[in-house]
Length: 330
Ligand code: AMP
Ligand code: MN
Image (cartoon, rainbow, N blue to C red):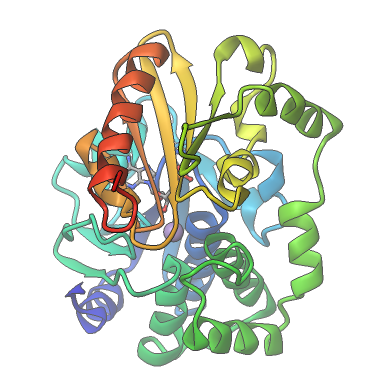
């Protein structure tokens, strides 16, 4: 754990005009956390805008207040007292990075252990299942905001998003207790689950056909991967897809300790997602390629064409598996 939530609360109390932002490739945790925080700060009489570095796919539309979120465009440089960067470090904010380096005060809130903490106030707690869990604690214990149904729905979606709706190894009594409180304040678990998992366009499910066709597995069965190329995506926009949707297939194979997804972003850029089990540290693997994340879920973007990036990552992954106790070739 680095920094202090009290310091973050003090900085929030001290300023009036905020911009809230998060990482590229947004997910329900960063967006739900950002919206709930915005709504809470507005209830405290603050002036707040949320700006996403990347477009928000249709699947975020159920989050209350999403229509008020702006998407970054070139030349964007609003005057605010402070920027709250949540669920990532400032370097992962895409087009907003140069604005964040212009000297504007930064408050950084995150749960990625690979984040060392940035800005004049920060709180990084890798033990939190989601950034939404930290925001929940900030609002209830430090800022004493009364939770509205909108805030509860956004925070529940954040927790559900990062815990696979309370199934992953980061699910514990603390996060379940927070979820229970959020339900008391109006979050509807069944409705949120439908929006997260059962509200797909036909094209998205159809795309699985092509994606599953690329499924591969290592000879010993401990590593499996899936590959998405630009050609496969065709006219489809990635913003309609979720990495979780695809990587869950290699991950669900019972012998697999490390699941990987390769996604061709362009001719010279590849996004890699990692999911692991047991003692396999996916964040270490991602860090080798300039990325980061959590022990069991991590990612990186490599400035190499897909075939090259894939070869490098598979080699490093095989080495990691061989070096991990219980997985090496005996
Ligand atoms: P993804 O595979 O993109 O869904 O990401 C898995 C986890 O790793 C999420 O918690 C992401 O926030 C995190 N992550 C992905 N890419 C990076 C990166 N380049 N740096 C740090 N964390 C990342
Ligand atoms: Mn998160």
